[in-house]
Image (cartoon, rainbow, N blue to C red; front, side, top):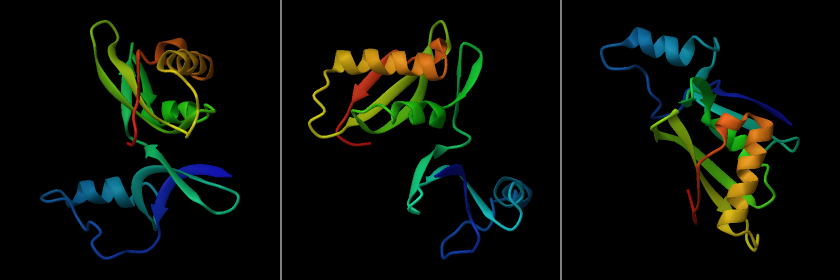
Length: 145
């Protein structure tokens, strides 16, 4: 059970080899952060059984009320809710905060949660685990992400 950056040690067919007119940026972005490995930019969780779960982009940041917050951090908290199978978090323009968190969730089968109950519980969970400012104003239940 460990989390970290997803890096690949060997080349594969079709992988990027450069960024057009900016090879230096390609090297700095994908090869320099973890020498000897290709950095995908994604976070990953590996279970004790050896299964991998992508947790989101490590560089996907939203700015809520002046606080920089990774969307993967919010998704991790949301995914710990008993009714949630998977989630995605995006930022959206907010008149007061600058950006707000908008949460999409896929529920587990027969979870029995209503939209209102789930929204309230997720807001409370995020407020406790991260901070009150990070609580989403919108939670949308969807069939798939």
